[in-house]
Image (cartoon, rainbow, N blue to C red; front, side, top):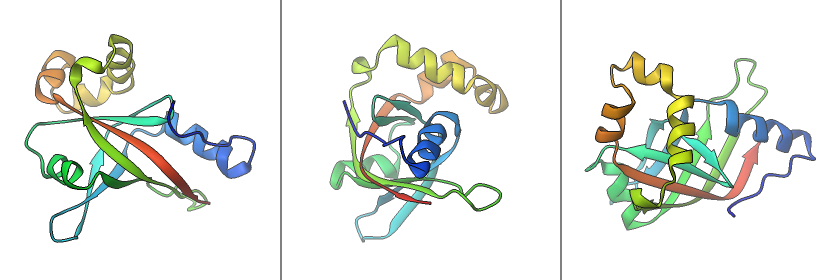
Length: 142
């Protein structure tokens, strides 16, 4: 099991809802010169970690392989009342370790998004073959 959010606090309850309901997060890695590199990503919250799929040969993959240090944050809510930022460790994991159940949940969550980018599930999974697992170590925000 990965990181646990404390849902007994008001902030923890909000963060718990957001990791399930949000569709887009910003994954920030650091390049070889120390420059932060934010990228919008789709994700799935799974037992205390985020699962993210990527196309191969992306800079974020090289950045993760080099340091593993990342942040992942959600946009502020329209009323700017909720800011949610996770910092932690990312790793590239073997696609074969990802269960069919996770792939199915991800495909269900992003079914409309895949249609919108003209990549049905089969083509999406063929293009986004790299798997990133982000395990938070710290959560902050309001």
